[in-house]
Length: 141
Image 1 (cartoon, rainbow, N blue to C red):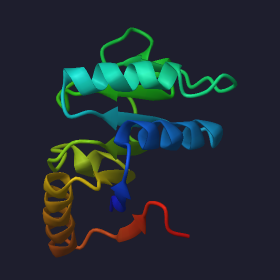
Image 2: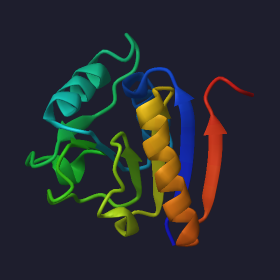
Image 3: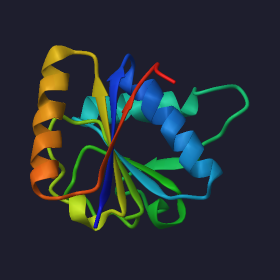
């Protein structure tokens, strides 16, 4: 069953997702970054290129011919053909329709009240479905 990790009170969802991608890439994991829309996907793509002067995180947008060979895929389209099913980082305010395809899902929730409310609703829904859940609050030890 899919393990779901909630990361809440995140001040900058894109920067946080980039750090998760860096950590996953460092551990040889493959992941999909699910953006809310095309604009956020483009911003995430740009942020991955500029994460730091010393880090390189190989990534492509979904649909790229190199997607199967690239460890990180960025998409706003859940219906896209995605070759990776190890990890999903959800930056949206909705429950991913493809949730059960992944071994692990990271729900990234900002401190914005609307985003937090949507995150709480997903948490309750996942709990009712007996998914294994963990919760991390950004900025707390």
